Amino acid sequence: MLWARCSQSRYGNEITGRPRWREVHPSRQRECMEELRCQVCVQQSSRTALGYLFLAAQQTDVPADGWEGHLTAQPPLCLEHAKAAVEQCGHLVRAGAVTLRVRVPRLYGVIGTLYRTGPDGEPEPVEFDGESATTPLPYKQRQLTPWFLASQLVRELRGVTVVDLDDLVPAA
Image 1: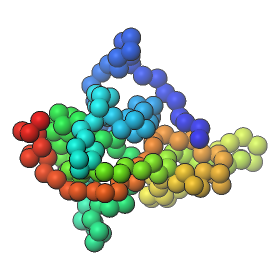
Image 2 (image 1 turned 180 degrees about the vertical axis):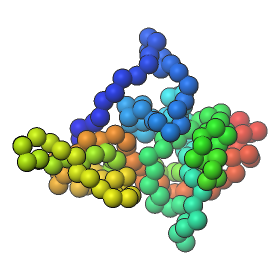
Image 3 (image 1 turned 120 degrees about the vertical axis):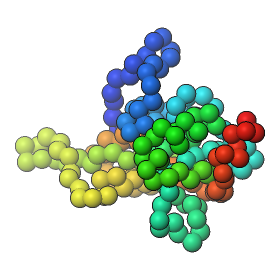
């Protein structure tokens, strides 16, 4: 898979700056999703017997089996930064946050840009309408889509338990 590149603000080996909740850096997102690290501090995410700690935006159309099989491009979090995300991430503040413990966060695929050969023989992005531009490309289909520039790694959440974040924080 070809991955998008962009610069990072680093001081030595430390990433500097404040979290930009809306603009997740592709390299950092990939690293945190691959290694199941906190997306804010890049340290070990919170993990218990119930699984890793993920946040999701509240949805009105949650299926009957709940969050089982939910696809996410949001890396897990440590307890400290989960609380900060619920308070500071505009999307989670507006929609409401759901706290999930996930036993099996399986690698699923990627989100990115599909390209095709243009009339001049150069690559050009394929334009999509609506949500299809953010629909993940499953890894099992990547051989069928050779001109794909990935920007976010996606995991499928299995073994999901909905928990209350307020109950988790004091225990930390």
